[in-house]
Length: 227
Length: 291
Ligand code: SF4
Image (tube, each protein chain N blue to C red):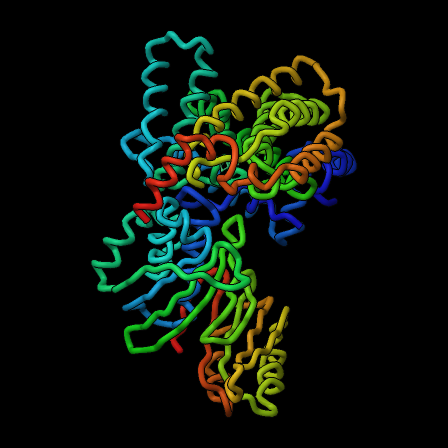
């Protein structure tokens, strides 16, 4: 059902909820999932993002998100300058993806400690977004829940352990999806939760056997926890 | 109660012994599990953002394509000369609609209402009253609940994006929301709100979405004026006791039908209408060279 603040909102920098506000969200989602300050970004625009992206400020919006701004940030129009100021290097190009939403983007980003993330995401209307691929693994989540992204080795028992821990802390799992890399071995657990996942729980998950990396997207704070 | 028909909201309001706006507030409290004060505080941030956008407009900025910017200022200056055919209030409404829609095109901060492209309509009819101290904050907040309830119904029954239903879905919906808001402010009852919504939607039905070069600039900015003027006239008609012959929920259904039958060329693809004129194509070409 409709949230009336989706009707009167979002409060955003124009001109387009899908090409601007959604693009900021994709950028900030990518930064959160990387878990640290972004120092370089190679950005490829697909479809309508490529065709009208410049006119809609999609390029600046993506950078603004990578810099940690939200869709209402007044610095979005100056994102190029802001990026230069903090030493975020970027390139823009175009790509033609198969079967992708017309407002899609592929980004390869690198963080200050050398962490890397490759993400494909789309802006699906009204400022809402969808993450479609992470590090070559197909996913589908939209940031409307608190989201745990857990990279793990595809081993017996890991999944049960994680869900047991969450249920011990009365964290309700709204959705859980598992995806494996085509080459096998590496796998991703995407867990969407109703409640906020506290820092200490995330740290515990990191200690589990077979866990390679955990990132967390907090829908209220768009907070970042380092991997 | 669900926000899926005007009738449902009106019935819900009657059952709760509440007004239209309050039924929408109650829905929000239920939906987002929050208390009255929280919901109203959030609505106030929406209003504050609208007022800030209007107050900080200078008319100096230009859009990325260079097609848009400065018209709100021209209208403000013209109004000051006192020669406006529309008179004081409507003259100001036009200026506000232009300013807000331009602000959106020029990457300033606005509130999508219901979309970014149509962000000028609702604030345009409210801000002139607010600036002349003809409105209390409480009245504005109530008017915004009224508007959002109307928008939610249209979203669920017909759609509010140009890509799904043409410009009638954006500017048309915004006009309907603004018309209902005005009726509430002027003390109209629920039936009058419904009539105003129906009249506004009928008068903009069939409007296509044909943005030049795919940008939310031309014709979007001036269409915000069309939406706001439609809202004012629809509200006045409803307050005068004029009824829409076709019941409001049927009008919304019809609008959804029209949107679904609208050719793809007229739904934000920038392949038809004004976007397909020689001028439109030229701008598109110029944009491409810049990308
Ligand atoms: S023409 Fe299209 S993009 Fe412009 S305001 Fe209307 S619906 Fe929005």
